[in-house]
Length: 236
Ligand code: ADP
Ligand code: ADP
Image (tube, rainbow, N blue to C red; front, side):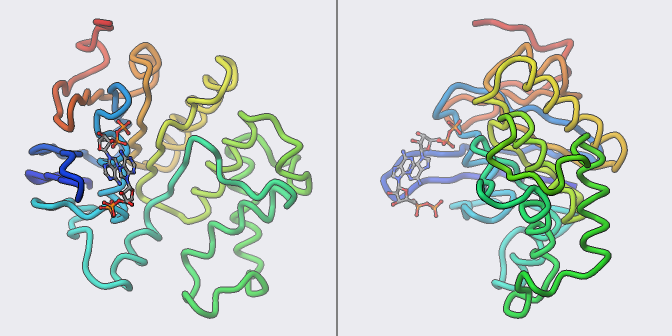
């Protein structure tokens, strides 16, 4: 499903972002990526959707090497839902508008303008919002929602892509504990219901132990731990 094969990333300034990263994720795994700031978590996530190109080695998603032509990358990114720490919503726009934008990845890159959504697109939006418990917020402005609700809108936006993989980069870093648990349980539940492969970077080991099926620890661009939540102890 996702495979890292001896992946190295050296940035132009000489920083080693990734060192010999080599592991596989099966379909349906919920992996928490743990490590201090600068450990390489974002770099690793960015190599999965092709934003960052490895200096050596390969990343595969669904059996295909990440990279190739612009069209290859576009098709790949269509299968990968992205969730960010800062939600990346358009505040003054409605929840519906923010979620339907996720359908753009299925449209022709030039013709896929906002006017071209059809009934099925809108149905997918409602179903996705239903999955995160926000169907009643369809016509509300995104910036009138709490942080946790905004992140769940971002999850819905990723779901309407009908992805096979969800990547989330510190999705709960700016949320309070209650919102954090709701966002994590929504991620966990949609993974269960839709058989998604989920890769989430977190900076809390207890959080990872509570929600992930597998924990990968990173330090200095290297994988230094790979095991079950039971095997992971909080050593800080
Ligand atoms: P994390 O997400 O775990 O905080 P990052 O992947 O952002 O870690 O960073 C890993 C290392 O690579 C850090 O030393 C960081 O400063 C460096 N780095 C990240 N992005 C770039 C970049 N675009 N150019 C140069 N160095 C970078
Ligand atoms: P990539 O290889 O992922 O395309 P680049 O190496 O082109 O990334 O870097 C993107 C930009 O980020 C560059 O302008 C780079 O100088 C800048 N950058 C440098 N150091 C860092 C850092 N520590 N964290 C994030 N970005 C950085």
